[in-house]
Image (cartoon, rainbow, N blue to C red; front, side, top):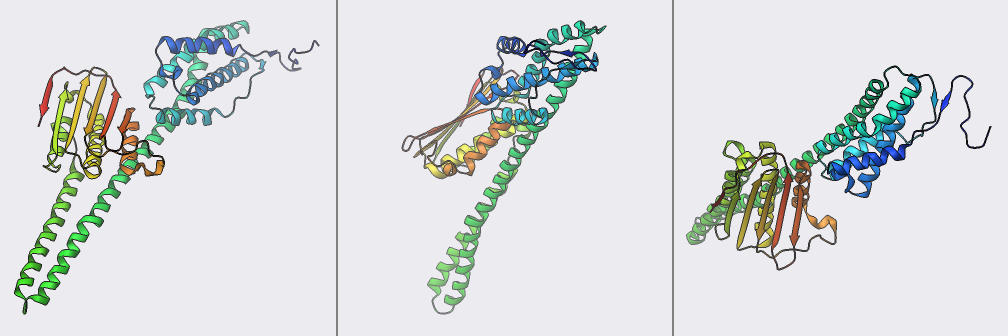
Length: 373
């Protein structure tokens, strides 16, 4: 037998490999023609696109040949489940919406169907196109289900992390602010008992100090209780932001400008976007000592853009030590990933901070502008 030809099986004929490269070229052309972000994404994403295409083609080729009673020379590309799960996780962290994965899956079908159908026809299958379609559909859906499960699992983990961080923040505020105020109030009440009989002036001062400490603790507890109840609800995103800005130190100038109809934003998007905006404003107020905080919200068909700007002290971003970024910023990034949004932070020491959140979503927004004080 001439060198390089496949060795024939004694039990059944053997067929050579399909031209995966031509299918890949067609697939990439289709992705580009449909404007898929998969062709311009990171190297890891594009490598996974290629590997998944090869995996589908190899699995379907093998199934097609087995259907026709022949043995094929398929390549071993690794465990398809592991690849699909990795794809789901990578696309979740790369802000690639599941609709793009669904489109890509349909394009695999379109790119590979002619080759698989021709292979079945050559082997004598009576309905090659139908058989090829069923085999491709089964393999693609199996891999999509595995990728979707990994995608959802990762986002659920991030949601749990964000919620856990929020609970920790509330607990920390109670422990570090409210509890010491109560302790100081109790201490002053004890000192009142000491001075009440002999030094009435000091006793009166201690009662006043205790009263102020307990009022401070009460204000903190009320603020935290209000924050824990904050939600967009029926009044909409703009009203939720306005209510929160009303709780900011009145010595800081605050403004909210809404361009477009924020009521068209789906509640699931509005809730997470509100939490990101709230965290950005709170970070500015707590750490930047600003004189003004400005929130701009723009809603246009297919896009939501929120920008939070302050004139505070700013900070070095990105930090030289990633661990120094803080829980608040990490939570903002995680919530942005849940939305498939792009979060950008621009800040330098002494120059204030700008946080932008951009979300690509289907929908519409009537372009009107209103400013809420």
